[in-house]
Image 1 (cartoon, rainbow, N blue to C red):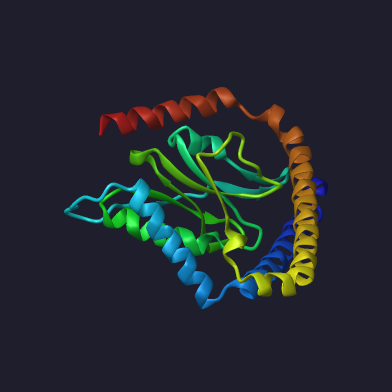
Image 2 (image 1 turned 90 degrees about the vertical axis):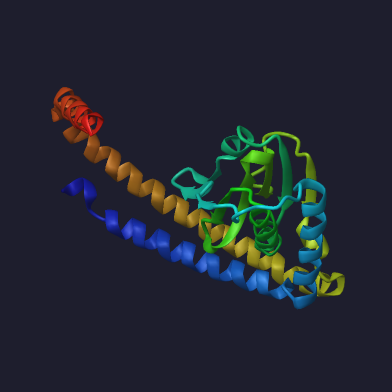
Length: 233
């Protein structure tokens, strides 16, 4: 019990920090997101769909599977790009420092599924109501949001700088504010990661106590019994 003193507090602190970071990132996004920008990204999406997605008469719309590709962990932010690269050889890298990727991806999602292709839509772990990545395995096509902290491990097929679509004057005017917001949100995420790491260290201490006393052979036997029961169905 002593090992777990403060354990819940670590998670509560992490959640508070991540929540605050998400709020700041949303404010940063709203600075640049205008109707004109949305229309510009919608037009860009239509151009990509024309080039990359063969048109066909589909009896039904493609299915959408929701899967997280990234997370905030005790080791920091991670994204499993290799999972996407294993399925998709053509990758559009979306350089996004202001949270604009969703505005492009949502139009791509609609266009791809309208042609009957199944997709894997990957929400942003910091804002699950928005998309961060989109995979179209049948076409070997992926749209992956990348950043300086989470670079793509290989050269992309195409690269799109989303902030370049924003109004130039608004971007220049807001640059100090955006820079400050990124700095503060990064510090909050760093504090959250520290809290998660502390919680994991506590859990590791607990496991070190009870792990030697677990009969893993019996656990395996129970798992095998359950598996054989499933096979009998």
